[in-house]
Length: 393
Image (cartoon, rainbow, N blue to C red; front, side):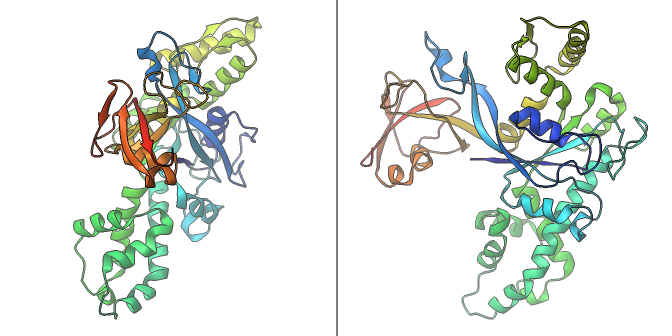
């Protein structure tokens, strides 16, 4: 399962975002370091279900009238402060938790109402771009420290006649989520000595920055956008990173209201419908959220998760079935499973995603939309329905 990690300084709204996206019971409070121990939960990215191409909607648990919700792991840990890579705050705990994350969602207080330590200040007096810069810098310095601490091992390995720098550095960085291919691409883009003994701190830091950027891409959530000065959002967009204006508090309120039966709302919808009784105060609060949704085409929470997975990670959704005509599994459930795969994946890749035995016994695949066999090199597309034929089926 893909892991999305929430990064950011204390009190930027990470825990609220996490609670809204998972509906898990976590502490949400207006003071720094609300989160002490890491929270891990299941959230979802949203896409169009292939059942929209049929007369009837499917009966999968994560399909709401053609809105398909595909599970991802969401990780929320202690907030970062400047100097986190040196152990300030709970920084080391956070940074170590990043190891297995596939993508980072940096939740920024776009209102400028909290300083670098997460302490409340007057709205608009703190530049949120500072949060973007220091979070990225802390991550880069943390990885540079890992490289530095392990460099002596690389130097020893370099004395072997069959030494390969790509393999040695990939082995070192595998725990961070880097593959040999990631390291090889980074090294192609860098100017460095062939002998690791001649590497300097600058060489190691350049490697760390490049590998981090490749393996831990970042999407910015401009949280508290409902009270943020417009110029703050403009400045965040100037960073060149994907920026999603959001109100995590608004999303949480909508999900709680939907759970209580007061409104009809599916995560990612641009609007909601009131279906239950509301007090005047509740109605006014929801109308305020509706105004923000109208400006940003939703609360931004679902959009941010989608941008992280379908945008930055460039994933597609594929649906394995056992009956290519009815699109069902062995029990008759229509489109029961959905898998997030890298763009460019093939039917054998989907087979291995289902189970290693299915992959090992792969014979061929059938496209459920065309009822035609597809080759091993066929590149899967978003929404493909595929029957895998395997000796292990």
